[in-house]
Length: 313
Image (cartoon, rainbow, N blue to C red; front, side):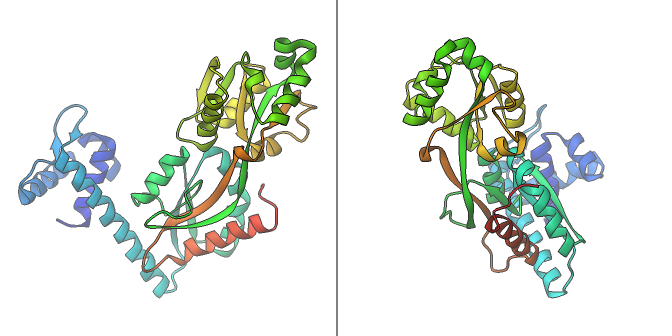
């Protein structure tokens, strides 16, 4: 059993197929099958149910955890020795939601690579909680996400407070509420409640992303059971639908600012719902005896970007 065995097993577990895993790793299917069979004999347990698609046994799920930790340790070892050798090369895997990537990453990556031209960045986009899980499993080097301030095994630095706002086409408000449309919007802002929009259709983000979680919580707290027309992980898609009057959607205020120079001129009404709809955005990575200098450098770029008040590209 060796590091290669761990790589083989993780690929099989993620692809749920010997054939696809072999293609991903550029090895033969026979090589993979023989390697896993050898590990099963060595451990005395079956790791994989050889069905279509294949699945992991209980022992296989446990082995997957060890395999991912081995991979993380292998990467950490390589990173530490690159630092010892003053070898400023490699790749950082950074997790970020699509919305935040669009807002934050262009300027941050450009700044970082001016100082570290031989370190590439692999951006992995997903929902907030998925990214935090992947960081904990060692599949990412760092994330820009909403992370609890104290999480065992993670180093967390807060960047800024992100606000979620509700946007809706003025034409949809007027269609639903007529001459009272502006009064309805103003009441929502004044009370921090969307109870007055009970008859408005909504567009929601995924449940594992923070704006999606906050929007569902607000809907529940105000007793609104909305007509949900679209659910998507991509807030830019939802904003485009809102612009066309399909429904109202909750999105980060930064995304509104980068999309519309003047929301009102574009026919959009932005409804701000108060401090309860804001949360901290942080950068986080796994704690270890040694943190790769490239991770520290990218964190410093992000913090500088937020400190000077310019977050956008």
